[in-house]
Amino acid sequence: MSPEASASEWESEATKEIRFLYDTYGQRKAMGQAASSPKLPHYFLQRCFLEDNDLLVILNTKRCRYRCPFCNLPAKSSQTMIAAADIIDQFLYVCREVRHSLSVIDRVTLSNEGSVLDEDTLPKEALRVIISCISEIRSARCVVLETRLEFVRPDEVKQLTAGLHRLHTDILTGFETRDGTIREHVLAKGESIQEFEAGLDAVRAAGCSLTAFVLFKPDPRMTDRDAVAEADRSIKYLQRECTAREISLTIRLNPMYRAAGTPWEKLALTKGGFLPPRLTDVLDVAERARQSGLRIYVGLSSEGLAGTDGTYMAREDFSRELLRRAVRFNTPGGSV
Image (cartoon, rainbow, N blue to C red):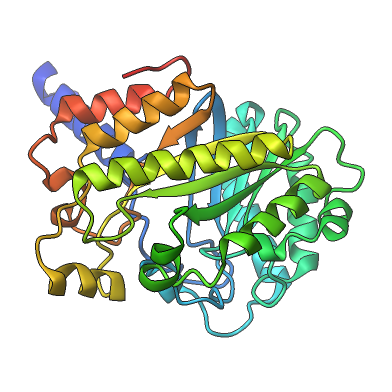
């Protein structure tokens, strides 16, 4: 800064720079873009997730083998295999970028816009090395692996984490909805409720906890009232099934957004009348779930795949104060 500048000019320049740094490297950083090199991840962010300081890493790997009509995330990924050495370099790059805060990280979430346990997209040796690296982050107590449950093979999961007694393993998976018709005909999950329950058995056998995504208003033809009722049913189902298996459960309740270019968006637009979820309704459902004893977090990101007109921000109830209430809900001890 120029020493000849006035105090107000110093303040203007300094605050402008901090605003740029926060928007570029903080919670608002661009998420929907593809990595520019196989040695770089698609995305990473150090964030608060409930009571934890979480390092989210979205690895740049071969794209997910599934083409779910509501999801456009894998489109930015490679159609060919990325070398294990390059994927390890991606994780090392992230750790170098956040090096000053490594000592306060409680957990690391590993994603690849698909299933990190699918060896056809992410080489097992790369995942093993990365998990071993996470064990060197001494404050970390948990590694979160995002995957479809069909790839959870108890013996292999135990081998991946063998000897890492300080690190607990959490499986992060998309459950979406309990409604079988929506799962099959709207979301095309390719995973029946029976197959999901078999996956829960595998999670239990592997000794892992579970974090499950539930979509709020997964069918664009739903009314607001229907969306509330369906989300309540899905959450209660997960709670019942995990309790029966003694699996520790966390819910991530995601308001559905209209991802550009997806078949789900086409359905929403052709049927007409689609209204994104109301954030007030989402918070009401989340509060009821928390009061029942569940750990629950409200997803507020559209992952860089939708304009505001396709998200909860387009609804009449939305305000900055409402968004602040949601953020407070997601913080330790928070409530609506």
